Length: 144
Image (cartoon, rainbow, N blue to C red; front, side, top):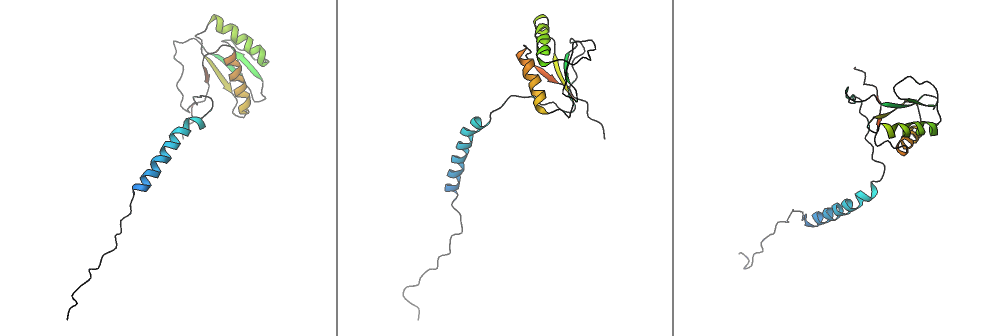
């Protein structure tokens, strides 16, 4: 005897509904897109690479503002200057040079053990003296 009504067995559905996850991801994406420009603040800096490009040979010789291992400032305008200077005197000389030769490149040469603060102070001083762009001098990387 068979029963008049036979019940069909349903198999459980093993699918995941991904629509709610997509909605959540889109909301998170919008939040990150809106907040990213607000969080990213700072100074625009082009960091030097180990294998930096050399200045073109047809350009004028650069003005080199240096900081030695003791934290003393020096300015080399083409000749050899080995006399330490105060930061204000350096700014005055660079400002006078920028008036006469505004296209002359300016680079910073700092000892690797100098605190970052000293390099930033020098770069801000050079910017205040009218230097439009400051380069950072590097050594070429040693081959292994």
